[in-house]
Length: 147
Image (cartoon, rainbow, N blue to C red):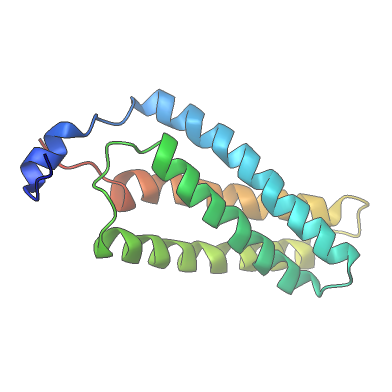
């Protein structure tokens, strides 16, 4: 039986796992998505892509992957889809896109000419964006209905 009643749909959906489980899943998924991001970033750099464009493209690929995996495995009790969720996702990832790329550019500018300068800038940018993403995904984009 299919129902359009939001209360009935909410009752049929299991709640998200606890905060610790969500953090652990988010970290594991984030690790995988960081590999996606990093792999694309380094491949684009090796292909001669401008460093800031490479960072932008790799960020988009990594965070899009993270959205779908976290939607499926981490924040399972959230309302399904809808324009608000999609809009929230787009706004969040637009903001974290600029935070990530800007942090990467700033770190590249400020860090001394070290062997691992590009990798360190990537880690700093990724860590900043990841923290923002978890907080905003959990409590804004994928918030669970109050019960």
